[in-house]
Length: 247
Length: 190
Image (tube, rainbow over all chains, first blue to last red; front, side):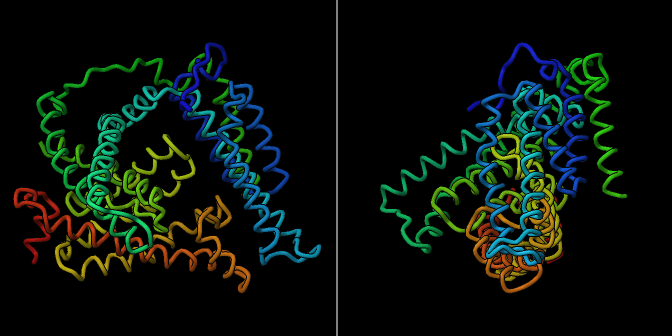
């Protein structure tokens, strides 16, 4: 399933990436400072409404499904085992249920926010965002994206070669031995590959102001015509939750 | 050249972290084994580059796979710092240093990770550690202490194994790699 979901309409998709990240950070911060059950319910409902209006649909629900099951597991675990429970109905404790629900709701809110941010942001925009903080960060993230398939391919080749020599992983000791036998060649080859990558960067004059400016001011601004409302709302959301937490 | 080499090593460190963690899950080892790249970069290039490698590993994994790994980037960064400073102090080629590193990290990693896990996940991981956590929680009144103690055995095995693996890799490196800053300082001190 692709991370980015292309949509032509929707105000959130038109928003510059830095504004999106700012809104996402403020909403996340506000959510982390929500500790009461009813406040958290209201916050998660707002985030759900925001996610749906920003363009999240069936795909958002599918992506959040594993986390919904995990949140239910958290609620069930704490309902039965939380030591803070005083009011019991058989095996079920009310205070534990509230604690589990608070944690589960917060987790769902975090996941919803992150998924809607990732769904509406291309990887190029994420790289540009990192590059706006530090040029090297963007290059690092881009190179990791390129090197991972190579490393997985090397791992696959090593694994097949070793399996043809009788390697197996039945039993814990064999698993650890197999892990070391498969990973060590990948690590050693990667170190030599790093040297090659450094030489390529040197040949491309990287680091001597050789990187072209590809991000426009508009793409990286936080305060544009379309982003003012979400930015203001997110600041108010964050301040409201922090104030509620302190008081 | 140093800056480019640093960038390349950070990239490789992040890649090794991700591939190592994926391989451990694929062959069902009950350990994380996703900090090998962080430790390697920390030993070769110093504590702060190691910390950056650890942090960026979790950020990248959070973007690509599961966003819930991002908060644990702080733990990975702390691992890079600790391993880097110990490597500067003692080097990383003898048989005692990885054991010291493993024991220290087995305590430090849960100390930093447990508050995050308790606040975000209620102390649960969705893995086998939850059984031990449930047993400890049932016999005590403390969520944090139960979550912390449940994580120590897995972290001890994980960090000691990772540290020894990094030690063997460092020992097998050719002499030209030993001109790197962190490694050179450690060798001069010994």
